[in-house]
Figure 1 (cartoon, helix red, strand yellow):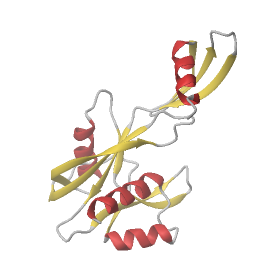
Figure 2 (cartoon, one colour; figure 1 turned 180 degrees about the vertical axis):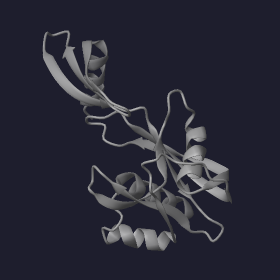
Figure 3 (cartoon, rainbow, N blue to C red; figure 1 turned 90 degrees about the vertical axis):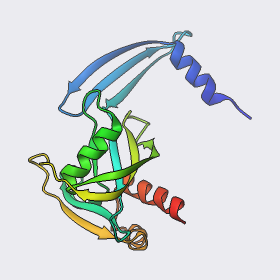
Figure 4 (tube, rainbow, N blue to C red; figure 1 turned 45 degrees about the horizontal axis):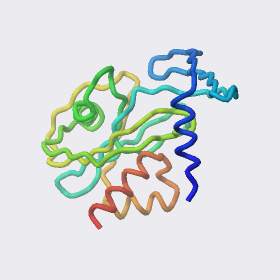
Length: 186
């Protein structure tokens, strides 16, 4: 079996890299990495730097998952998604998950379990989303961001899977989270 990926990783780790920040925004930074390999070859990569995020699969007392419905400017449409949010500087993902649950759906989880995580678009972005299963929900709302105007929707797993099949749920983190949850409960 070929070891091309290991060779590429070693070359990149040993290369001289100069990073230039092109734009620094409220959430993301756009950087350009100039890489010079030991053999003299040079490459340029545009990279979106992101602090990381969390996404939660909240399950209510009836066994339904609570999703959020909100307008997404970049997608230019209303999307149905798992509650999620961006990590603040040096914030623990578990603490962020609890805060986001309170802000987005008005509940805290007395039982919260890590389901691992995933990179969203590793070809150009370092965003990693930590995924959590949240159960034993109790009302305890926090005021969310002033730009968040969110509706909540409670769905059975079967309803959510059907909405994915019908292209009604099109958010990648939500699809990944629902499929991960389906693998656990099936």
